[in-house]
Image (cartoon, rainbow, N blue to C red; front, side):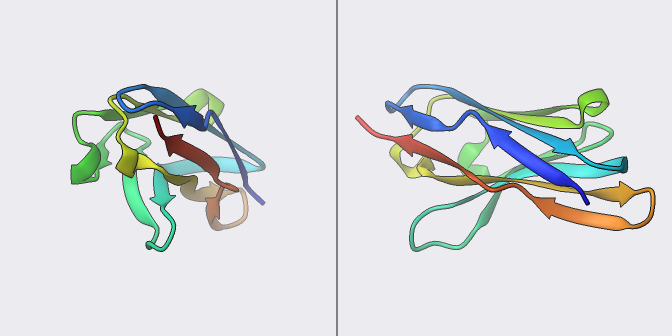
Length: 119
């Protein structure tokens, strides 16, 4: 079983920055994709950004130019650097990872970390 543990959320003013981290643990053979999703109150969960093991990235249009996703394959960790934060970035941010253990494929979610942008 693969577990994801997120950290780095919090309260920030508009225009500020935060950095989220998510570390995967377990009997991991390979992680193909790691990503960040978010869910605001009353809204569906949406993709924020994701990155493959080879470093290819994909971003939601709403965060392009402001957020940067990166990963450390040796540490099975993914990061999300969030700059120029806006009120509308307020949400619970969830880490996601898809890959393979020694026995089977997996798709895991973290418990979520709250990001609140407020003045």
